[in-house]
Length: 114
Length: 117
Image: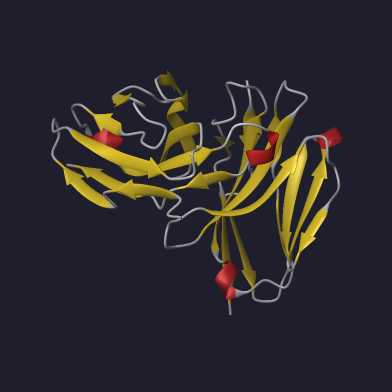
């Protein structure tokens, strides 16, 4: 049972480049989310999904796209990277309902945009 | 809108001292969940505890204890007899219990705990 797997762990991009952060979970969780962590600001929600085919914006969605074609995968796309997107990104998953309300996080992806 | 406030940016203690981290939250929901996570220098998020809004019992787990008070919207965390390995950033977080909110956490800004020998 791998839990939540994020790749890559580290990435350096040039301004204007595009890339995709991958997130996969093997727990059949309905809910998946992406957060970014910046110094002094905690983690902020970028996008989330309540199930395959359904996504919605969080607190800081600008500059990011997501899709959820399968229950397992929830990739985060940066279409044209900007230095302001330098951050640590965390993917999370959670099962629906009161019995499954533990949230599992991936190990994080450190992204630097130069 | 929900909000989580961790007013303490950094706390420095000497080993074996107790440390209390404050967390105050705001939500309009009557049913919600509160969490504490630890982020050591290695960067991963380590789950510590989840508390349901309808369960106000305090909890103790080893050197960790939590004091949940709905009347003051607080969910404070105490580390007893701190150790150097407790040095980390600690986050308090809130999740509302609606269909749309299960996957969404509102985090506080975090409190850096520094324990020196």
